[in-house]
Image (cartoon, rainbow, N blue to C red; front, side, top):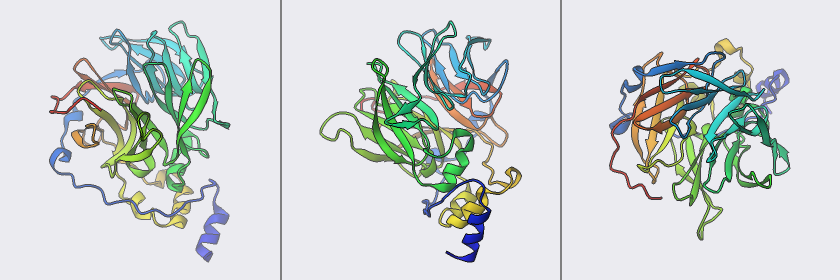
Length: 352
């Protein structure tokens, strides 16, 4: 251990223990990734209280549902007027609408919750496979009611997510929950800040966004390869967050928190520099570019849509959902949800 490393570890107050990694060079911003300003002109619906509608879902009547940093679950009508449905008393993140009209919430502080319109909140899981849920983040729900969800980190809460990204030890998990029995099982571990979850339309596989490695991984759920984990889309142009299950047009939408951060990639091979970075004051931490970005990928993991905004546009985009000609967006820190017209569909085979 060098003197510099010894000093850095002695002064560390975060508990990070980074490992070296070598991120790939970002893909060129050409073709479908060529810069555009589509997200500069979004319609915003402001939360009555709080901020940070991290994810968005659409209920059976076409109304948008989200949760803010004050624990409240909101539903917006078609004109953008909000009604409070419940309060989780935690930090709601991922939102899904269940077949019976209730809502499945991944709460960063309380775990996997089921919420109804009368305000009742049931905890379905606050631990999984023998470990507490440290950073319950996002989910997808199968037609049989089975929940696929992420626990992003074994060491750091969502509020301290940057420490997990700087550490890069891959302690995230993709889990499966049977709400009928309360049983959980592990689908994949060793994930780099496991985040968004998406199901194939035929439910033959499930996808999980790995924020810390700029990729989306795939876990096969059926067939001879059942249980196999593989990289489905790698070297994304930005930092992936939540994602959708496969749409009728065969697409998976992925929210990009920000474009790739050059400084973060530069220090990736140097654990000691990342310890130092973790301990810097917030004002001088590596700062993501505040510009909106969402992408859509086909069933083979190829990017077929890229919608971007300029500096100061609605951002960071952390949630995305399409419905009835609109693309609805959520954000970890904005005071509103947003929507923009859905772009024309490319020629994509919808099957999985």
